[in-house]
Image (cartoon, rainbow, N blue to C red):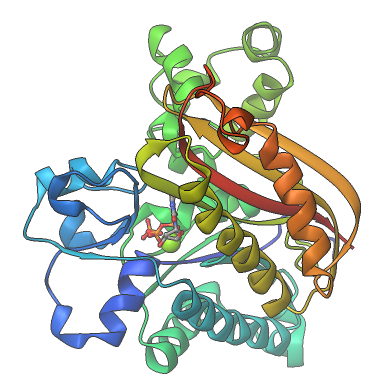
Length: 366
Ligand code: TTP
Ligand code: MG
């Protein structure tokens, strides 16, 4: 029998960074936790990485300025980002998921630090036993909770798109299964922002047109959407109908690794910039290496100026983690495009803008 529909699972950990901190510090339980930049009594300038569900009750969410989070809930527990802890937990969780996938003859793809897809379309054929998605979803949630003390939400659907929307649907501690027959009824009432691919910019365009739900979106035909948004419009036409042809990639490919830093005050002072810059470069390389990689092709330096304009410069060459000196030298050359040279040779400060944030990324792994 040829199956028309696949059975795809999407697993996403709840408030991941904050849950990891709770796990390590059980006395935080029940309290609002915000992980991100230092709030500096409301004067901090970075952003929130994530907040636990207790803190979300105050309106705090990812990417919000940390100063705003502080105003919303000054009594919250504010914690810095402890990447190595989250990487360790992520690794352990992904191992559990890869094992489940293998046990049921599936395909596994890590999609982010706290999320993964498993294609279990063939699980029913395994050992001639019929496995129900709910059993396997419960098995996954229980294994992660018992072994890693973290709560995961699971979504099951006929493709990656529906599985991803489903895992978010009843967060936290969610389990949502959407059958192929119920897919359209599930999607129609959802807000357009629930569709991955509709971000803040596309949202504004649709709201102006009074397109608020997936049902509304479905009333627009392809030529109209193409005129409005180009190719992206066509892909949203498919998404609104619950269609998604993507296949689970058997081997996860990390596409890039990056890190950045927001200065406490905007600066053009190299004696402040450089001591932050090199540790960022080294952190990125260490993270890449910890994932078992050695070689990559491209480095990118990102600078955000005080007016929030953000610029990047990239260089491609054959880089290896064993040659950190070359990486640092090339990274510095890229940074050079953005810093006021006059400061180096002692002339008057240039008319260049001050820097708010610096970042470094590596990509094109080989
Ligand atoms: P998400 O899965 O998007 O968010 P979450 O796990 O905190 O919350 P939930 O899934 O329950 O809605 O992201 C996973 C982690 O990635 C998150 O814990 C922190 C990090 N992250 C950032 O650092 N900045 C961001 O803007 C986002 C969205 C996430
Ligand atoms: Mg998550």
